[in-house]
Length: 524
Image (cartoon, rainbow, N blue to C red; front, side, top):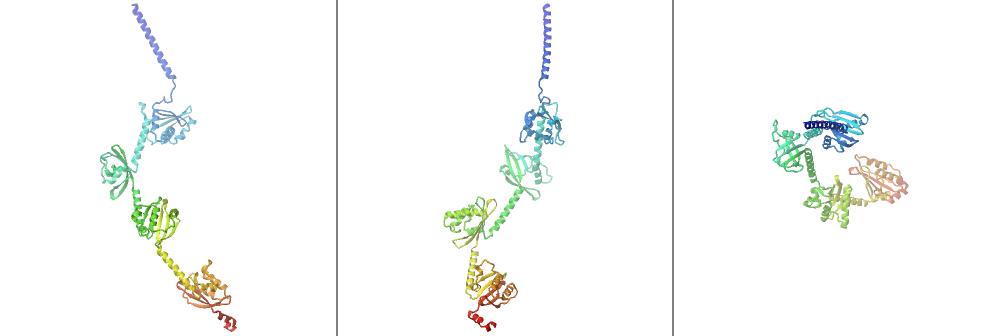
């Protein structure tokens, strides 16, 4: 009996001791928990919180790390955070600069930017703490990463809006050609191609031939025939995704129109060049032949198959030399240097020469620069022109030699009063040959010389009036006395084209002396 009571007393004491120890342990744990340091993220573990030292990220919550990871902005964490917050909080950077003075601020997102958002920012111990809170978040599920989910949702909305408004056609199709997805531009174009009032079916209608979309040629150009006979051109670009394909169709109407205009322009130039008598050869910046006309074949004798191979400029000149279609050089090396100088001169727009060929032809060769370093070589056969020039020069020389044999001093003036020709007898009478002088050889100038070398006589004024009169004119004669006493007979006559002939003949010396010695004859 005594033993039983002892066991009971011991059990009670042990229970009381255990209870006391438990109470002490709980109290000690509560005290330790209260005295433990509070972290900066202890208030709302599920919130999106950033801690910056200046622009250096010190720490962040998992939600904040996810938000930084989904950002496409270039730069550090500070730049990425500001790039994300700027659309929601205007002037956020200037607002955060107020923290050094005010210590903290709370901002609400701009209305119309989706779900509302609250930004709490404060300065703690020199560190900038920013916390983003979604007022519509479910507080019963604090573990949900709502801000990161919201960032991804916003980005998805932007991407969807961008793709729907893209001016290019985008669609996905399976390996069998079924269109499984298309953007807004594709669907609008389907409405332009299909019949009015036709509903969309599944799979979506195809716009382009399946063969065209499966070739995988980058920049492949295809044509769509729209309603009312209109047409639209597109350049197809394909990206393979396993068995499926993602295809982009870029509008190419402007490019097609430009290429068509260029082709028509080139055809017009080609037809124009084909009727030119001047040989034309255009070389690009690498001096390869790009364009030539039929006249070049006739003038150079080069075969069309050779020119069609787009030879270089020096190759063309070499071939012309083999056919003796360029002036024969004294030495080949010097000729090559001359051709290189010709290329440089043509590129600067300074080359123009006359080639006298061994066969008797005469070519005028002109080099002209073109944009992007190209040059154009023009070859013209001027043999007929040179022949006419030589004949004209020979006729002039023959006429000059004929009038030089005439004893009468002759000077011919044009309609404008300029000296056209004079003979040797003129130089003998007046002591000068005006055709060899650089001075003004007009009728007025020569009349002044005649006055200075003769006695006063009104005949010189009459000559000027006669040459200036373009009406009906009749030949007339006069006489004048030179300063040395000789008497000259003057003859003036109109010529074709308003020209004027002046002729002077010195009277016989004996007759002149008799007149000078006989006063009666002098009075007569």
